[in-house]
Length: 282
Image (cartoon, rainbow, N blue to C red):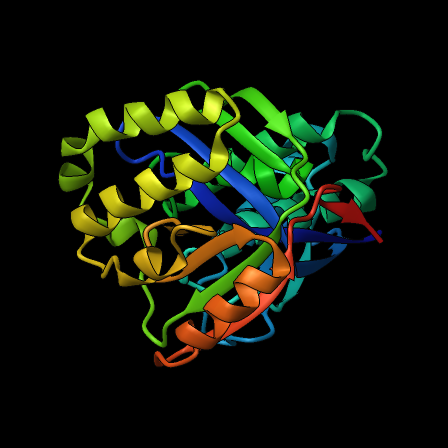
């Protein structure tokens, strides 16, 4: 009883910490999960890039799938990822999505529910494991479904989905920032700005939404806004998640020029594209 699946990273259009609404877009970088089920009744986990990492989330994803579709099985889940952890690029959502799909595959239950509902299993597991404040349905839905999604994270409801064909530039500083450590009270104070971002996203004006979100959350969370200014006016950029990464979208030539500027900073910069197919089994 074995299953394998991959799920993409994502960047932020609207951070849901301020008003409960979120928006994110999938990008072409992946986490792969392999799940092997057995009759032990106990689930263990392993993260290839970080042997000492907390594996509660991926283990809980397996447990929730077994509770719903299995018969008390245990097993082992192993993840490998090219998405940096605690960088605002939705590594947790990608790991959860890949693990859920791999477990459903191992259980032979992959056809019993659609991917949106499969995504909710991972979101609930993330809440159980305490790795998210909002439930991150925005991040999880973008990773699971591909494209860009707008969600109500308080209800785990998908409000809008599109498939933009963007080139994407990602800048990840050397520091790390865990979303559960974010100052929620400061984020809630910028809810009026988040309301503007939400309206822009629901109108499909994702680029302007990203810019407003980026300036607002950089101020709330104490990150520099210079990378966003440097992208303007020819590209749109935002802080991704609760940082420290930034993502910019635009045409490739513009982003290549921006890459030269961002490369002067400490950290890692990489050019990629949006991803529209979402998570898949292998």
